[in-house]
Length: 146
Image 1 (cartoon, rainbow, N blue to C red):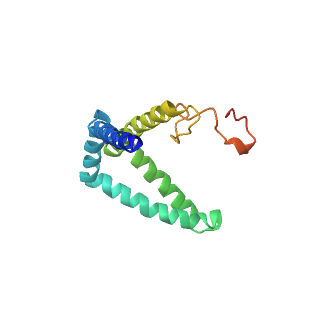
Image 2: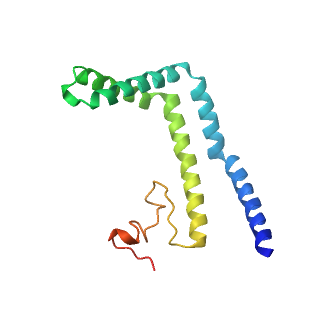
Image 3: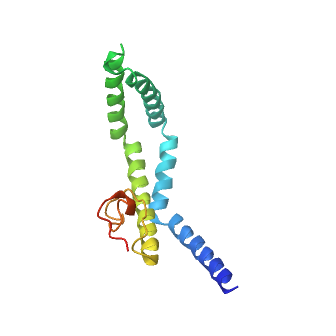
């Protein structure tokens, strides 16, 4: 019965942590940037055009340089990607998204690390990823689990 009570306390604390993260500066900035992105007609047009061109690009890639539109579509994708990267609204959203992701990754790593240093947390960031068991015990790598 004591374990059940502790589980509920843990869930309550998890809810509180989630609320704190949702109220953090990183989460607020993310929501503001997301709203701006959704309201920016030019950014939305660029995103839609890029997505359509990306679909064409994926189709052209199946045939490679032998496809008649290979060079045209490949160039258009690169040009649109560059426009996306330099669009202020899109760049702001991407930055806010990365900052929130970084906060979530750090929280996940701290929680996992407080349980055991051998728990792997996929963060996509080598600074926070577990170094003790990067390939898994069966990978033949230099695993120091044990």
